[in-house]
Image (cartoon, rainbow, N blue to C red; front, side, top):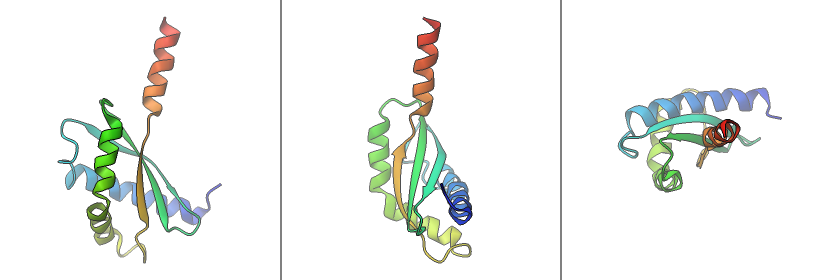
Amino acid sequence: MQSKRQLQVAGIIQKELAKLIQHKFNGLVKGRLLTVTIVRMSPDLGLAKVYLSIFPSGDGDKIIKEINNNIPKIRLELGNVIRNDLRHVPELIFFLDDSLDYIDKIDQALKS
């Protein structure tokens, strides 16, 4: 279970990353809708696991790999935005959130 501080920091990072990805880094994924679904913080607030939902989810692993290659740029921009809220910008790791695909597969199976 996450502490109150972990949840607060995760909320700040989720909100600001969503804005950054939408406005500054939208060229990374052309023709796709990227959504920051969940941010999970480590207990020491030094690591943020960021889960992204990609629609359409065609080559999602390739997109996540491209985003992970651009972490230094994203982290720098995030640091510029949240510098008044946090002393240290956590390390970022991006993961593919495939829960929507899983729901769709279950829905298709139930309809069959």
